[in-house]
Length: 438
Image (cartoon, rainbow, N blue to C red; front, side, top):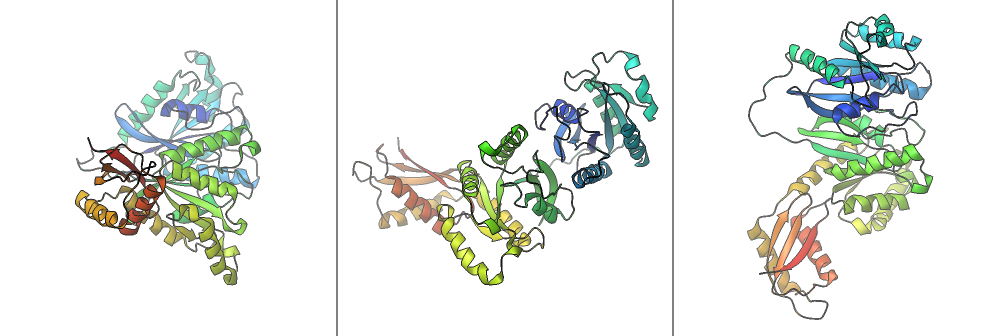
């Protein structure tokens, strides 16, 4: 059963991200004193008074009619549609402004439970702080300071009490809990990451704009694909440090953090530009973090059919340094290759968790030793005794030997290649070490 959703809604720069971070107890959303810093939605599962729910930070609503604000407003409205309760946030320092009335009128029409929170109140116990905000027509009004934490407990108490009354929180049967696959989409700015996520979920929930860097915070969406529960995470574009401003640098840090916490990463490449140096750095970064990986060659619809086969051969040569990572031609616009991409992701996730029986590994080892005996850097022959797989996610192997001598690096590469030849592990890095048997 899905958790009930509580959405934080309001104008730009009223403190929604600060309140989200306060409730989530972690700095997950980017918080700066700049209007519009949060452009998309961020989810976090929290527990309060034995009630588990998903708190959602949303982009700032605006009466600006530009395309980007239209998309933000549309995304916020889709979150409100799925929410069980709304926290409407206002700014005590600016007072009630005309657009607050528009937001309040819209929220009332949704027939959702709305808790009005007045943020940036230095003295929450001062009743006069709320007097003007009762004009918005809500019974439940709370004075809070998201920055200092004043009043946040009170609004959480009221919200969870309401959620309990909905009877949507039921006792879960005792059974194995399936952990959703964390699938991160990353790449340079404007390569089509958000468009690809939109196509996968079949709904334009992500903000897609021709301007690079539209997505700033990692955006999480919970879905089930081919009976596999997943959390799809769209990240900000990663680019050269010298090209980044403060907000963009913070976004890149968040993107890297999301990759580190991922299970599988889809590196989205704009194939019309070829495989660039930054693409290679991102792929290497994913590899260094030990994550499963699939490369999406996006904008494939822009490549003429006569050029496709030669281009795939060229890409294969370019990506020789990660020849174990599959690459799939895709188009986030037409949908070409998206089904194949997601099937490949599921296969790679299986490989990421795969554990080889020790007996099979040692049969393999004996066969390989008949082909090629390892030699130390000093020229001494090393005699492997046995091999075990010590971990998954990613797979890690240890070969126990008769000596502490260091095995030549090329033998380790040879052994990893032979493991791949026999057991597969497509899409995931393999780690191998040698250790003396005590």
